[in-house]
Length: 137
Image (cartoon, rainbow, N blue to C red):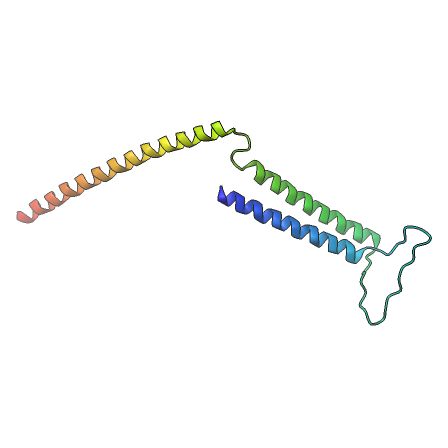
């Protein structure tokens, strides 16, 4: 589960970075327009670099579309990761029941492991006895 949580955190971080990158793309490449006849656009100062590097409308729109698709894809990835987390569709009782089942499975597996270790030890004793009897002859 911690791996899923790490993936989710990384995806959310990447989404925030994409939001920032999208904002700066729009801020940097929009064309200068006024909203009303009273608005004015401040003239560029010679000693300051251009704050806006306007792109042609079709290029700007294509860039916006690509950025929007990237944001949607990342958001869908986050939704998938959230839906794969345990407990969202299960009540606390169901989760406790699942934990008990897993504990029972673990107990059975541990018993099988102990039996296998015991069997291994018995086989090693027999092998040792066989090797000692071969040396005597």
